[in-house]
Amino acid sequence: MNTPQLQRQFENAAARGTGSPRRRILVVDDDPSLRLLLRTTLAADEFEVEEVGSAEEAGEAARFRRPSVVLLDVTLPGMDGLAFCRRLTQGATYGQPTVILLTGAKLRDAEARAAGARAILRKPFSPLDLITLIDELDDLPAELVIGRTEPDAEQLLVYARDLGRIVEVERRQRRLLQHAYRQTVVALAEALEAKDPHTGRHAQRVQQYALTLTEAVDPRLLDDPGLEYGFLLHDIGKIAIPNHILEKPGPLNAAEWHLMQTHPTVGAEILSDVTLLEGHGIDVVRSHHERWDGGGYPDGVSGADIPVGARIFALADALDAMTSDRPYRRALGWQHTTEEILSGNGRQFDPSVVKAFSLRERQLRRIFDELWVTTA
Image (cartoon, rainbow, N blue to C red; front, side, top):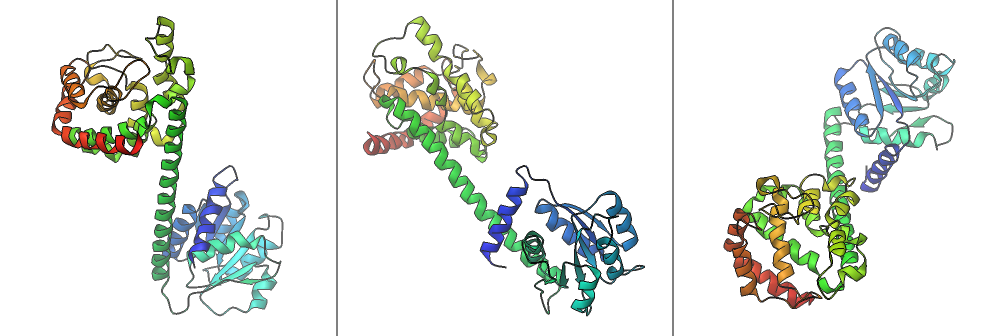
């Protein structure tokens, strides 16, 4: 099976997962290992799967849980597959499901057609080809379909090969999805900065500062991809702040300051249903204006009660704010900014983050020089 076919199967699975009812599949085969392979493969593709080892068991299962498709081995103990196929397809008792016959023995097409089978798949076969066959049967002409087979191959080897293909495509899909997430987040950050042009590329600069500090404080935090996205989207709540406040050239009055202080909670509410940001990411959005001494906002928490990602980001955000021109003041020089950060140790900033700043100060300065040259 080629990659485009696999891609279509993933798209079909996605469609079934967005509101469409899952198709019920009944697997009837006396080989437990094959039943396990089929149950695992089909369940991964969003089918609802039940499996039994005989026609007699299948009759009970199909009577009460009407399957849409029955995968039926021809050679069964007790009643054989062809006889049971006739029962399934020639009366109303079982809802006349689509029957795909599985066989490792010789079977004439005429016998399968007379029994009411919709398709034949000879063993060993590719489980992925089986999924394709199930998906396509409804659109094919109403005549017996002979599925593709795998001559001179063991079923487990065929399955292992298919599993490798599934993993390959899934990894590719995951990389594409992660890239799409990143592009979307960056676009949101740039849209926000278009609303507040005085900040330049603040989100990109402060993200790089925060990642550098996180590596020094606790690199394990970077295992959560939502943290980086939280760094980029920390000020998304400013969408709700009027431009005349964001661009005001002088100090804010009490009412304006109160409104400005709502942007962390507004941002957290906007992103609350974004699964990717659950955990450290949403913590950064809500708590990046908290202070180590408890004098911050919106919750006034202090010390270790402030999420660690937000503590790291608070210093990174302050670093960029002090080294940037704002409507109400000119940017501070790097040395002056460094002195201000060190003076905030244990008051505005977590001491462990200030220590990380001291250890990585040269690296942070390089980021400052590079990004201001390219974005100023």
